[in-house]
Amino acid sequence: MGAIEALLLDTHALLWWWAQPARLSPRVLGLLKDPHTTVLVSAASAWEIATKSRIGKLPSGGTIIARWDERITTDGFTQLSISPGHALRAGTLPGTHRDPFDRMLAAQSILEELPVVSVDEALSSLGAARIWE
Image (cartoon, rainbow, N blue to C red):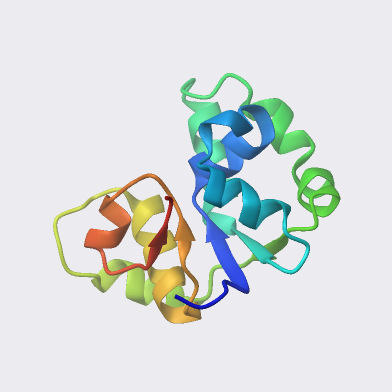
């Protein structure tokens, strides 16, 4: 397999990077620390964090939201907006997986030709190239 130049972070991978980096695989840590790797963070992750904060599933969500742009910039990550093409692909991906955040990340991964960093095998079942180990 060739060198990975760019990748897309799943929301849990982003949260682990910020709060529990030991939960990331050694391969993922190496990629995230490599200055030659372009790391993209989807607007879907911001949406997911805000939603989980609002419904009480992510107690630290308010702090994350308040410092979102600062943290992304400090880490040298690039924000990936959601386009109509992404939305259309997410809505039409085959399969029964219902998580809208996973479907969006998979669609972005496919359309932008970016592997997604995730421990979640459901992204692979949606057709996304996935990196973990």
